[in-house]
Image 1 (spheres, helix red, strand yellow):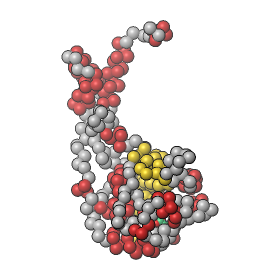
Image 2: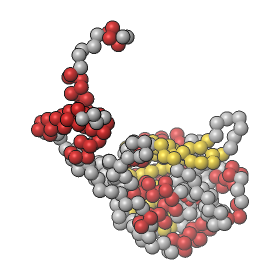
Image 3: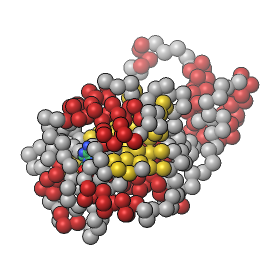
Image 4: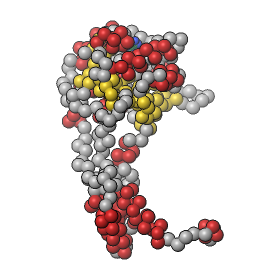
Length: 331
Ligand SMILES: C[S@@+](CC[C@H](N)C(=O)[O-])C[C@H]1O[C@@H](n2cnc3c(N)ncnc32)[C@H](O)[C@@H]1O
Protein backbone atom coordinates (compact mmCIF):
# COMPACT_ATOMS: atom_id res chain seq x y z
CA UNK A 1 0.00 0.00 0.00
CA UNK A 2 3.05 2.32 0.09
CA UNK A 3 4.74 3.43 -3.09
CA UNK A 4 8.01 5.21 -3.80
CA UNK A 5 6.32 7.22 -6.54
CA UNK A 6 5.07 10.66 -7.43
CA UNK A 7 1.67 10.88 -5.70
CA UNK A 8 -0.23 11.94 -8.83
CA UNK A 9 1.12 9.08 -10.92
CA UNK A 10 0.76 6.67 -7.98
CA UNK A 11 -2.85 7.61 -7.23
CA UNK A 12 -3.80 7.28 -10.91
CA UNK A 13 -2.20 3.86 -11.05
CA UNK A 14 -3.14 2.32 -7.70
CA UNK A 15 -6.10 4.10 -6.09
CA UNK A 16 -9.67 3.50 -7.21
CA UNK A 17 -12.18 6.37 -7.27
CA UNK A 18 -14.18 6.81 -4.03
CA UNK A 19 -12.02 4.29 -2.18
CA UNK A 20 -10.38 6.20 0.68
CA UNK A 21 -12.10 7.34 3.91
CA UNK A 22 -9.65 10.00 5.04
CA UNK A 23 -6.77 11.86 3.39
CA UNK A 24 -4.17 13.76 5.41
CA UNK A 25 -1.61 15.67 3.36
CA UNK A 26 1.30 17.87 4.23
CA UNK A 27 2.60 18.80 0.77
CA UNK A 28 6.05 20.29 0.17
CA UNK A 29 5.86 23.96 1.10
CA UNK A 30 7.32 25.53 -2.03
CA UNK A 31 9.69 27.66 0.05
CA UNK A 32 12.97 25.84 -0.56
CA UNK A 33 11.98 23.20 1.97
CA UNK A 34 15.03 21.18 0.96
CA UNK A 35 16.99 23.84 2.87
CA UNK A 36 14.80 23.84 5.98
CA UNK A 37 17.79 23.20 8.22
CA UNK A 38 18.73 26.86 7.68
CA UNK A 39 15.38 27.95 9.11
CA UNK A 40 15.41 25.65 12.09
CA UNK A 41 19.10 25.96 12.91
CA UNK A 42 19.32 22.34 13.96
CA UNK A 43 21.72 19.45 13.67
CA UNK A 44 20.98 17.96 10.25
CA UNK A 45 22.91 14.76 10.73
CA UNK A 46 19.76 12.83 11.76
CA UNK A 47 17.57 14.26 8.99
CA UNK A 48 17.10 12.00 5.99
CA UNK A 49 18.46 13.47 2.74
CA UNK A 50 16.53 13.75 -0.48
CA UNK A 51 13.45 15.82 0.50
CA UNK A 52 11.71 16.68 -2.78
CA UNK A 53 10.66 20.33 -3.04
CA UNK A 54 8.37 21.95 -5.64
CA UNK A 55 9.33 25.30 -7.16
CA UNK A 56 7.14 28.36 -6.59
CA UNK A 57 6.56 28.57 -10.35
CA UNK A 58 5.19 25.02 -10.50
CA UNK A 59 3.21 25.21 -7.26
CA UNK A 60 -0.22 26.25 -8.68
CA UNK A 61 -0.30 23.49 -11.30
CA UNK A 62 1.18 20.92 -8.94
CA UNK A 63 -1.49 21.74 -6.32
CA UNK A 64 -4.31 21.55 -8.85
CA UNK A 65 -3.14 18.15 -10.10
CA UNK A 66 -2.66 16.36 -6.79
CA UNK A 67 -5.79 17.87 -5.20
CA UNK A 68 -7.86 16.70 -8.19
CA UNK A 69 -6.57 13.18 -7.64
CA UNK A 70 -7.27 13.39 -3.92
CA UNK A 71 -10.86 14.49 -4.64
CA UNK A 72 -11.30 11.57 -7.01
CA UNK A 73 -10.08 8.87 -4.62
CA UNK A 74 -11.92 10.19 -1.54
CA UNK A 75 -15.21 8.41 -0.85
CA UNK A 76 -18.38 10.55 -0.70
CA UNK A 77 -18.62 11.82 2.89
CA UNK A 78 -14.85 11.29 3.31
CA UNK A 79 -12.63 13.98 4.79
CA UNK A 80 -9.39 15.60 3.71
CA UNK A 81 -7.03 17.68 5.87
CA UNK A 82 -4.32 19.69 4.10
CA UNK A 83 -1.55 21.28 6.16
CA UNK A 84 -0.10 24.41 4.58
CA UNK A 85 2.09 27.35 5.45
CA UNK A 86 0.99 30.82 4.39
CA UNK A 87 3.30 31.25 1.38
CA UNK A 88 1.48 28.86 -0.98
CA UNK A 89 -1.88 28.77 0.77
CA UNK A 90 -3.68 30.68 -1.98
CA UNK A 91 -2.73 28.06 -4.57
CA UNK A 92 -4.10 25.27 -2.40
CA UNK A 93 -7.31 27.23 -1.77
CA UNK A 94 -7.68 27.89 -5.51
CA UNK A 95 -7.13 24.23 -6.32
CA UNK A 96 -9.70 23.16 -3.71
CA UNK A 97 -12.22 25.68 -5.06
CA UNK A 98 -11.98 24.01 -8.47
CA UNK A 99 -13.05 20.61 -7.09
CA UNK A 100 -16.35 19.38 -5.70
CA UNK A 101 -14.84 19.31 -2.18
CA UNK A 102 -16.62 21.47 0.40
CA UNK A 103 -14.96 23.46 3.15
CA UNK A 104 -15.80 22.47 6.75
CA UNK A 105 -13.13 24.39 8.68
CA UNK A 106 -10.06 26.49 8.19
CA UNK A 107 -8.09 25.37 11.25
CA UNK A 108 -5.14 27.27 12.66
CA UNK A 109 -2.46 25.04 14.14
CA UNK A 110 -0.46 27.10 16.64
CA UNK A 111 2.91 25.48 17.37
CA UNK A 112 5.84 26.34 19.60
CA UNK A 113 9.21 27.69 18.45
CA UNK A 114 8.32 29.54 15.27
CA UNK A 115 11.06 30.80 12.98
CA UNK A 116 12.65 33.61 15.00
CA UNK A 117 12.49 37.10 13.46
CA UNK A 118 13.37 40.34 15.26
CA UNK A 119 11.83 42.97 12.99
CA UNK A 120 8.42 41.40 12.50
CA UNK A 121 6.04 39.10 14.36
CA UNK A 122 7.18 35.51 14.70
CA UNK A 123 5.43 33.08 12.44
CA UNK A 124 4.05 30.38 14.72
CA UNK A 125 1.06 28.81 13.01
CA UNK A 126 0.12 26.66 10.05
CA UNK A 127 -3.17 26.42 8.22
CA UNK A 128 -5.10 23.17 8.10
CA UNK A 129 -7.85 23.06 5.50
CA UNK A 130 -10.50 20.55 6.45
CA UNK A 131 -12.78 19.70 3.50
CA UNK A 132 -15.24 16.91 2.74
CA UNK A 133 -16.52 15.28 -0.42
CA UNK A 134 -20.29 15.63 -0.93
CA UNK A 135 -22.84 14.21 -0.51
CA UNK A 136 -22.20 14.25 3.23
CA UNK A 137 -25.02 12.05 4.54
CA UNK A 138 -22.35 9.47 5.39
CA UNK A 139 -19.85 11.90 6.93
CA UNK A 140 -17.62 10.64 9.74
CA UNK A 141 -17.21 13.22 12.48
CA UNK A 142 -16.78 11.60 15.88
CA UNK A 143 -17.92 14.52 18.05
CA UNK A 144 -16.98 12.69 21.25
CA UNK A 145 -13.66 11.33 20.05
CA UNK A 146 -11.85 12.87 23.03
CA UNK A 147 -14.45 14.25 25.46
CA UNK A 148 -18.02 13.49 26.44
CA UNK A 149 -20.44 16.42 26.05
CA UNK A 150 -20.71 17.06 29.77
CA UNK A 151 -17.00 16.95 30.76
CA UNK A 152 -15.91 20.23 32.31
CA UNK A 153 -12.53 21.96 32.50
CA UNK A 154 -11.22 23.30 35.83
CA UNK A 155 -12.97 26.63 35.28
CA UNK A 156 -16.26 25.02 34.30
CA UNK A 157 -15.96 25.24 30.49
CA UNK A 158 -16.96 22.35 28.26
CA UNK A 159 -13.92 20.22 27.36
CA UNK A 160 -15.70 18.99 24.27
CA UNK A 161 -16.30 22.55 23.06
CA UNK A 162 -12.69 23.55 23.75
CA UNK A 163 -11.33 20.51 21.92
CA UNK A 164 -13.47 21.33 18.90
CA UNK A 165 -12.42 24.96 18.54
CA UNK A 166 -10.71 25.63 15.22
CA UNK A 167 -7.48 26.87 16.78
CA UNK A 168 -5.34 23.92 17.83
CA UNK A 169 -2.42 24.54 20.15
CA UNK A 170 -0.15 21.56 19.66
CA UNK A 171 3.60 21.51 20.18
CA UNK A 172 6.03 20.13 17.69
CA UNK A 173 7.93 17.07 18.83
CA UNK A 174 11.66 16.98 19.23
CA UNK A 175 13.31 13.65 18.77
CA UNK A 176 16.97 14.20 19.61
CA UNK A 177 19.21 11.52 18.20
CA UNK A 178 16.44 9.92 16.13
CA UNK A 179 16.34 9.67 12.35
CA UNK A 180 13.62 11.96 11.02
CA UNK A 181 12.14 13.79 8.06
CA UNK A 182 12.55 17.53 7.48
CA UNK A 183 9.25 18.54 9.02
CA UNK A 184 7.38 15.78 10.76
CA UNK A 185 3.83 16.32 11.97
CA UNK A 186 3.34 15.69 15.70
CA UNK A 187 1.60 12.56 16.89
CA UNK A 188 -1.16 14.44 18.77
CA UNK A 189 -2.05 16.51 15.70
CA UNK A 190 -2.41 13.39 13.55
CA UNK A 191 -4.26 11.50 16.28
CA UNK A 192 -6.79 14.33 16.48
CA UNK A 193 -7.55 14.33 12.75
CA UNK A 194 -7.67 10.53 12.57
CA UNK A 195 -9.93 10.00 15.59
CA UNK A 196 -12.42 12.72 14.63
CA UNK A 197 -12.64 11.78 10.95
CA UNK A 198 -12.25 8.01 10.67
CA UNK A 199 -13.38 4.77 12.26
CA UNK A 200 -11.48 1.55 12.99
CA UNK A 201 -10.33 -0.24 9.80
CA UNK A 202 -11.00 2.82 7.60
CA UNK A 203 -8.42 3.55 4.91
CA UNK A 204 -6.29 6.64 5.63
CA UNK A 205 -4.14 7.98 2.80
CA UNK A 206 -1.19 10.40 2.77
CA UNK A 207 0.05 11.63 -0.61
CA UNK A 208 3.32 12.95 0.94
CA UNK A 209 4.39 10.36 3.48
CA UNK A 210 7.74 11.92 4.48
CA UNK A 211 8.52 10.03 7.68
CA UNK A 212 5.30 8.00 7.23
CA UNK A 213 3.98 9.74 10.36
CA UNK A 214 0.32 9.68 9.19
CA UNK A 215 0.57 6.01 8.26
CA UNK A 216 2.30 5.02 11.51
CA UNK A 217 -0.31 6.73 13.68
CA UNK A 218 -3.21 5.48 11.54
CA UNK A 219 -2.06 1.86 11.83
CA UNK A 220 -1.32 2.35 15.55
CA UNK A 221 -4.93 3.52 15.95
CA UNK A 222 -6.32 0.45 14.19
CA UNK A 223 -6.91 2.03 10.78
CA UNK A 224 -5.42 0.95 7.43
CA UNK A 225 -2.99 3.21 5.64
CA UNK A 226 -1.61 3.88 2.17
CA UNK A 227 0.37 6.58 0.43
CA UNK A 228 3.27 7.87 -1.63
CA UNK A 229 6.73 9.33 -1.08
CA UNK A 230 9.04 10.41 -3.85
CA UNK A 231 12.23 10.57 -1.79
CA UNK A 232 13.80 7.11 -2.21
CA UNK A 233 16.11 7.60 0.72
CA UNK A 234 13.27 8.36 3.16
CA UNK A 235 11.04 5.71 1.61
CA UNK A 236 13.61 2.91 1.93
CA UNK A 237 14.29 3.78 5.55
CA UNK A 238 10.66 4.26 6.64
CA UNK A 239 9.18 1.26 4.85
CA UNK A 240 11.20 -0.94 7.23
CA UNK A 241 10.16 1.14 10.24
CA UNK A 242 6.46 0.87 9.47
CA UNK A 243 6.62 -2.91 9.50
CA UNK A 244 7.42 -2.67 13.21
CA UNK A 245 4.10 -0.95 14.01
CA UNK A 246 1.34 -3.27 15.22
CA UNK A 247 -2.24 -2.49 14.30
CA UNK A 248 -3.99 -0.82 17.26
CA UNK A 249 -0.86 -0.55 19.41
CA UNK A 250 -1.59 3.10 20.24
CA UNK A 251 -5.17 2.50 21.36
CA UNK A 252 -4.27 1.73 25.01
CA UNK A 253 -2.61 5.18 25.23
CA UNK A 254 -5.93 6.97 24.54
CA UNK A 255 -7.94 8.22 27.49
CA UNK A 256 -11.22 6.46 28.18
CA UNK A 257 -13.96 8.90 27.23
CA UNK A 258 -16.68 8.62 29.89
CA UNK A 259 -20.15 7.64 28.80
CA UNK A 260 -21.96 10.58 27.27
CA UNK A 261 -24.57 11.66 29.81
CA UNK A 262 -26.40 13.96 27.41
CA UNK A 263 -28.52 11.06 26.18
CA UNK A 264 -31.39 13.35 25.06
CA UNK A 265 -29.23 15.89 23.22
CA UNK A 266 -30.86 17.01 19.96
CA UNK A 267 -34.23 15.38 20.72
CA UNK A 268 -37.18 17.81 20.66
CA UNK A 269 -38.43 18.89 24.12
CA UNK A 270 -41.99 17.97 25.05
CA UNK A 271 -44.29 20.51 26.76
CA UNK A 272 -44.44 18.19 29.75
CA UNK A 273 -40.62 18.15 30.01
CA UNK A 274 -40.47 21.95 29.77
CA UNK A 275 -43.00 22.31 32.59
CA UNK A 276 -41.03 19.90 34.82
CA UNK A 277 -37.75 21.70 34.11
CA UNK A 278 -39.28 25.08 34.99
CA UNK A 279 -40.80 23.72 38.22
CA UNK A 280 -37.54 22.07 39.29
CA UNK A 281 -35.55 25.18 38.47
CA UNK A 282 -37.87 27.34 40.61
CA UNK A 283 -37.65 24.87 43.51
CA UNK A 284 -33.86 24.74 43.37
CA UNK A 285 -33.35 28.50 43.13
CA UNK A 286 -35.85 29.09 45.96
CA UNK A 287 -33.59 26.92 48.12
CA UNK A 288 -30.78 29.40 47.38
CA UNK A 289 -28.99 27.29 44.75
CA UNK A 290 -27.38 29.46 42.06
CA UNK A 291 -28.86 29.59 38.56
CA UNK A 292 -25.72 27.95 37.13
CA UNK A 293 -25.75 25.05 39.59
CA UNK A 294 -29.48 24.52 39.12
CA UNK A 295 -29.06 24.37 35.33
CA UNK A 296 -26.14 21.95 35.67
CA UNK A 297 -28.07 19.60 37.91
CA UNK A 298 -31.18 19.68 35.68
CA UNK A 299 -29.01 19.20 32.60
CA UNK A 300 -27.57 15.97 34.07
CA UNK A 301 -30.94 14.68 35.21
CA UNK A 302 -32.65 15.23 31.85
CA UNK A 303 -29.63 14.29 29.70
CA UNK A 304 -29.80 17.64 27.93
CA UNK A 305 -27.15 20.29 27.31
CA UNK A 306 -26.56 23.06 29.84
CA UNK A 307 -27.43 25.73 27.28
CA UNK A 308 -30.72 24.16 26.34
CA UNK A 309 -31.78 24.22 30.03
CA UNK A 310 -30.52 27.78 30.41
CA UNK A 311 -32.56 28.80 27.35
CA UNK A 312 -35.75 27.41 28.86
CA UNK A 313 -35.29 29.08 32.23
CA UNK A 314 -34.11 32.35 30.64
CA UNK A 315 -37.26 32.51 28.52
CA UNK A 316 -39.13 32.27 31.81
CA UNK A 317 -37.05 35.16 33.19
CA UNK A 318 -37.89 37.21 30.11
CA UNK A 319 -41.62 36.59 30.52
CA UNK A 320 -41.50 37.66 34.15
CA UNK A 321 -39.43 40.74 33.48
CA UNK A 322 -41.24 44.07 33.17
CA UNK A 323 -40.84 45.73 29.75
CA UNK A 324 -37.86 48.10 29.86
CA UNK A 325 -38.11 51.69 28.74
CA UNK A 326 -35.15 53.45 27.19
CA UNK A 327 -34.64 55.45 30.36
CA UNK A 328 -34.40 52.30 32.49
CA UNK A 329 -31.17 51.33 30.71
CA UNK A 330 -29.55 54.48 32.09
CA UNK A 331 -30.83 54.26 35.67
C1 LIG B 1 6.18 18.38 4.17
S1 LIG B 1 6.86 16.82 3.86
C2 LIG B 1 5.78 15.68 4.60
C3 LIG B 1 6.15 15.41 5.99
C4 LIG B 1 5.28 14.36 6.64
N1 LIG B 1 3.95 14.85 6.86
C5 LIG B 1 5.89 13.90 7.96
O1 LIG B 1 5.23 14.06 9.02
O2 LIG B 1 7.00 13.40 7.94
C6 LIG B 1 6.50 16.62 2.15
C7 LIG B 1 7.04 15.31 1.58
O3 LIG B 1 6.56 15.15 0.24
C8 LIG B 1 7.57 14.55 -0.55
N2 LIG B 1 7.20 14.83 -1.96
C9 LIG B 1 7.43 15.95 -2.68
N3 LIG B 1 6.86 15.87 -3.89
C10 LIG B 1 6.22 14.67 -3.93
C11 LIG B 1 5.42 14.02 -4.91
N4 LIG B 1 5.16 14.59 -6.10
N5 LIG B 1 4.90 12.82 -4.61
C12 LIG B 1 5.15 12.23 -3.42
N6 LIG B 1 5.93 12.79 -2.46
C13 LIG B 1 6.44 14.00 -2.71
C14 LIG B 1 8.83 15.19 -0.03
O4 LIG B 1 9.97 14.42 -0.35
C15 LIG B 1 8.55 15.26 1.48
O5 LIG B 1 9.02 14.11 2.13
